[in-house]
Image (tube, rainbow, N blue to C red; front, top):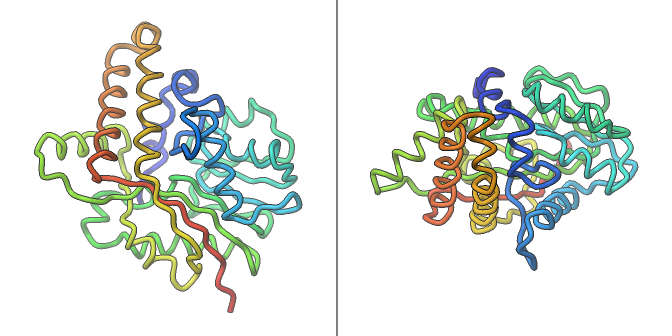
Length: 284
């Protein structure tokens, strides 16, 4: 089950204008790559480029973005890389509205769950950026269902892809369990308040779940990159504190400042990390 549409909209439908204030200009809500730069905009472009390369995207590729957010990646694919057939799915109606507003040539966005998706074409490449955190709920993870749920996700992606297809994947990772009571409390608060219905996977769960559908070609972890990304977000949020308090209320500002501060701490303390993967479809 994972996150329902209502729960996803708790996470992403505060207001498109609100998120635009503190994300990068393309509205990537995931980790950037800070190799050779301290600039958030450049870091996010490096991330999108890495995932496109991992998915072997070409101009004549048909590409699916599972969990396409506000359209940062589908716009990058269509505009920056010249891909002519790009599809995205999201459960957030506000995110879909933002993609429609951008009017990106060659891009089709759909509001639906991945479990209900009916692809109009078979895909040469698939990209999914920090969507897997919504596949399994904390209760389902505690019941031992996570690997089976992730494996079903990889099965569906395999079904939608052409033989020889590649998959560029990015996921937050659940690493160490905090032994400091305050840290444990704050991580629990983020899980149930900011991202209800979801939980971050463990690396070993992903590696187990790709079989028998996808071959793992490469895994790159970027824990400190995500720490730096969340530091940038928190500073931008704080730079707009007065506007946020005036327009959305003090609780929204305080909740998001608390959430981003918890993220900075979690990546610093190895409670969480970030992994990028290049996968290749296993063809029988």
